[in-house]
Amino acid sequence: MANAYLAIDNNHEIVPLLNKIDLPSAEPERVKAQIEDVIGLDASDAIETSGKTGLGVAELLEAIVTRLPAPKGDENAPLKALLIDSWYDSYLGVIILVRVHDGVLRKKTQIRMMSNNATYLVDRVGIFSPKMKEVDALYPGEVGYITASIKSVGDCSVGDTITDNKRPSDEPLQGFKPSVPVVFCSIFPVDSSQYELLKDALAKLKLNDASIDYQNENSAALGLGFRCGFLGLLHMEIIQERLGREFDLDLITTAPSVAYKIHLTNNETILLHNPADMPEPTQIKSIEEPMVKATILVPDNYLGAVLKLCTERRGEQEELTYVGSRAMVVYKIPLNEIVFDFYDRLKSITSGYASFDYELIGYQESELVKVQILINEEPVDALAFLCHKSEAESRGRQICERLKDLIPRHLFKIPIQAAIGGRVVARETISALRKDVTAKCYGGDITRKRKLLDKQKKGKLRMRQFGKVEVPQSAFIEALRMSDD
Image 1 (cartoon, rainbow, N blue to C red):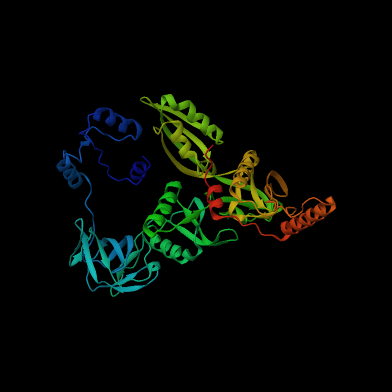
Image 2: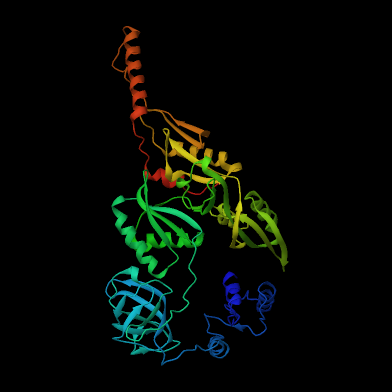
């Protein structure tokens, strides 16, 4: 639905299509009515197809030819091609997918990237049919691939314009609107020796996904890693999955957070991506958090549970309408409240029948506080988070209880605290492992045993003062997992 609305907003021609028409449960008339009610498209001439049986495929191809506008372009004009995708091949280097708008792109053409003026000589020109097939040239309106012995992944940015170096175009194509990351998390390799592999993997993924934003980060607890920005939760999960599957990396991912606007007392405004970088409370005048317009389609019998969930997440109801037997509810909710486990909870309480979409609508002032987790009175940046004042205490207590079970016992007592500023709001204590120093004493004067116990007590105090708490990385992984309450 979100993509359909984007296409409508950009005045694209849309061909409604009903797939899986061969299924016994297919209800084409009801679905056509739903398309007209929900999206507002005329579905009277929607094409009924089945990918399994091939029914309607010929009509679909004919509709693409006759109903969609043909591409326009001047073959004699200077070359102007849009870089729409790129990926890395270990034999050919960077393979670029292009769409030619003007001119002709041939083999042995010396091309120039208009964003950074890098020049290359084209080795191969081809199309997909669907396998890679070499051709002599690409003409206006055609989409194909080129290779030019490009070794540096940083020289190919999606949305760039490619032109002929000898006869360049005056102006680049409009390209794509720069993406703005809204969800942030830190990614660290479980094995610190894989840091360079993670760096290369992110660079290769950025080749065909320009919306990934990342920068170096150093955590005292987790070592070297990257602070990454994503377009949303789904984007974040896809990138994490690709890093694991395609590059065989074992990763630790911190809890997702969002970008906050902080207005300082000196009238400056900063964007805060990482809770660990939050200024001192005395320097902050106000904090604004991003708000989203959430649209949820849900069967009527699950509506009550959905309304309760949205209210718990500080949502404000804006609209409630019905489309047949399905309710469409629109809420204004803080983005911070849906980046944790909102989608999982929604699927759980609706048995998977709810569909959920959201769009950013701006920032709103809110009472937010930074909760810092301290282990043995030392703050752990990787566990710091921002949340609403009303939820800070319960969430801090939840993490402290979880860490108590995850951190192994040491020879000294370990306090685990959640603090807001200088005020501790939750505390758990891991008791010390006690070595039996009186085991060698068989009877005799009690003062000897007491002397040994007093010596042990002094040693434990000194160990707590100077001893380092070894927190296993598995404990961070479990503690940073989203709440499953």
